[in-house]
Length: 362
Image (cartoon, rainbow, N blue to C red; front, side):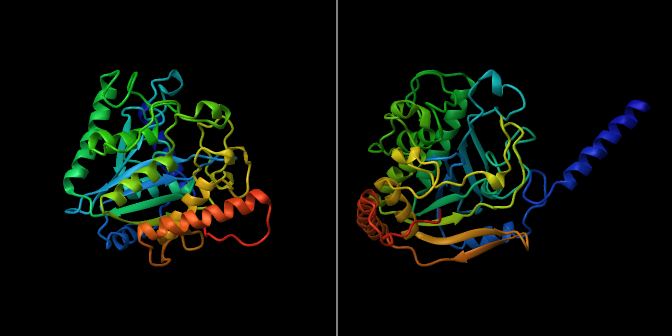
């Protein structure tokens, strides 16, 4: 009898704790209009969306790359994302979601939800609820054949099957199939899906270590999120697909701290850095990037920009803003190259004056 009372008390305490979680925290209240914003965005008939998360470390920060695939019949969108904790390390053996290499969850959960369909071990701000920790750029693409989407889905299932059976030396990877921050990372899994799954034979997917700013010299053979996204976008342009960009802005008021971090920091106090290419910008603690490739990417995403989604702290509702008409890709790329070159040279020489290009919001 006492055991039953204790169990009931614990359950009630946990439930009360969940209800008491503040807005912008794990288990806390969610924006009331998530579904309405999702329906508004789905008025555009895009097929897929590359999701590039901003970085949360000082200096140049690479962020994360995931892919959302839309079912045109049902309208459902599922995000496929490499699982940082699926590395088979002892450190991540307990208390982390590590059941599969590629997670698959609804896009609104990935971006805005505060509880996860993956269970209690899923990581808030990483596996779900991204915008409470960092901004996310969505590169939406139109005109993709259903066959191609099915091939991508099939490749992600292959990745998970290979992970479960601890496969080694597959057609897409040398060594054991498991997450590796310096190897089989988010950029490589997404790039491999297009190259080996959807038949993008011309898409370069590098074999080599992923980077850390401390290991910069070892990063020459890295697959990096923004660089991989740009490669895929060029493949889409060559196929005649149309693109635009949505900026999902970071909610800047979350006081949640990830208990897994060695030195927990409130999400609101974490850097929110544009996802950098491999460059000298990795040495910059803060401030504007100066590398040509970073300027080009930031300008290109702005030129393709259409919407911005923000979470208003006062109303605790999502706000969808139509920013402008996106440029056609060829024009967006040409202007981004021109302005990036001019601004890079100006910054290198320390010349005064406003920038020629306009970056996607940093």
